[in-house]
Length: 220
Image 1 (cartoon, one colour):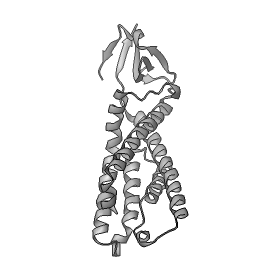
Image 2: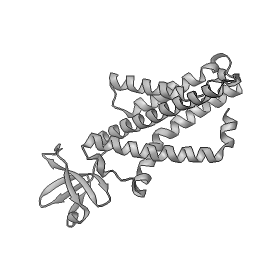
Image 3: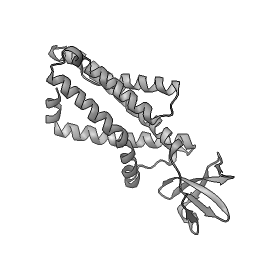
Image 4: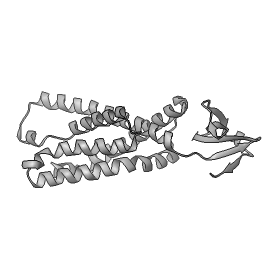
């Protein structure tokens, strides 16, 4: 199974590119939703991709490497005995790593377990590899998996981006005696929150990049 997938280099590159771009976009949506930044301003530029891919790979890389290793070991042992549960182990890996990056609560534990189940559904079942389903069943199965995969990727990275926005530190700028936390920059659009008594207010302050001339950057 894994050897056949590896031979399709063009397909792997195309799917990987789409996955990274999609993960960046939904990561930005989750980030903006948590900070109340209007979603219409989202721009997927090269700097945005460069930054977000690094954050997304922190989650994608361990999930991919561990799951792939589990399936390789299971395949070498012909998915017999405890190795027949290899896809289930991947479910637990996805759920555990995702929950690690989320705020720890019972609701988030359920969400991570549910998304892990969707990840489990994306893994071809070893028992079904010897079957020869009809062409209609193949198309139906592929369609369902694509829909579940899109839902999995979008939901995962919206939640991941939201959790990241909640925990990330922000650079602080000072202008006319007022302190602002820099939340996000999309092209010429700059979004900040004023800091009063050491806390960020809920309202978003919008600047054009030209309006930031003369601002002083402070490091905490």
